[in-house]
Image (cartoon, rainbow, N blue to C red; front, side, top):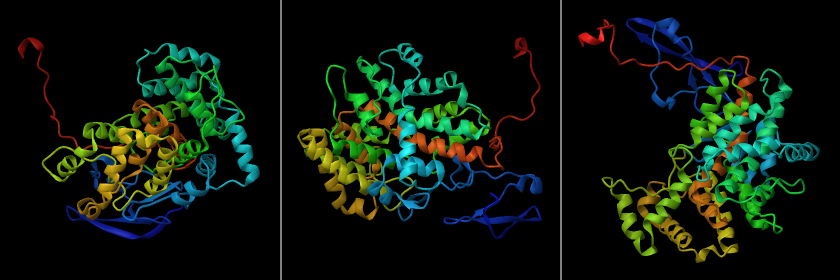
Length: 433
């Protein structure tokens, strides 16, 4: 917090005692009241379930203003990055806080490419799972097991080892994810190829087979790269906070990222785009849309339109506008408009964008709506949607972990509690209860 600017103080009076709490100001965003000395001064803690009003750290990586729909990485808007950059550039930006020049980008791409193979013995891990294991369960297990194979990059106090671990996680995640899919469908694993881009490699390892050459369509590759960019980091969400909390104990980076994947698997966090497809299947047919629109407006009906509105973005999701064009392009390219479910999605989008109820409440389609229909059109089963989210978000988790480890003020996380249980009780032997 050494770079935060003092911005006055707040006065708190408790039981007749007045204390001054510093107010700190970042480069942009709300000011914060520094309560680190509150307990020593008053004997009290703050109470903030889910930490929705608490800044748990300081960071220079990602800035969000949900009220006006802003998402920036290192000061660059997500619209600018997704429209002009590549996922590899965004990865470099998050790791190094600056966009690379051409020489730096080429070197970084080569480093990631040549780290994309998995240790050959890791193939055996997949065989230990049931064939019907969820791909996210496989991801958690395999990523956590990386610490058993890459001992030369687990010393978190060595800057070079931290960087190597970061490169390995970014590079190997597409291979791990693709193999999780291949294992679930009983197809042979494909190894990465050094002549393909990050997104091309992932698509080939997922959908290719040894019997014939697989060449991904450029529009699909572009859409995949944009999905990766748009999910790369999203500030201090549940999974990122989990990675930071796990990392604060000194755990190795592979264990920390596995913890992030486990958190992302929760339906309230990483399951939104899967929920979009499930909702569309529930609606079933375009003729049923008016009935479900009516239900969505009824506050007493539990039905909700998934993929519309966002907890953070109260105006619009800036990622959605970027992905809408990719969705249109992919659906046109793949003839996916002949898919009844995707036709239904497009009709629902049209109606919701014109309906006064949704427009007034700013319930616009979000990134999960468009990513869900793109992934469905490409051919991913819904069980892979959160896996793709984890693949993309890994760079954000790694960058956040790395930033935390390099913070000289970093300490092990230790949230407090408001205790509501029984007080001191005398033990009664079991035969007298």
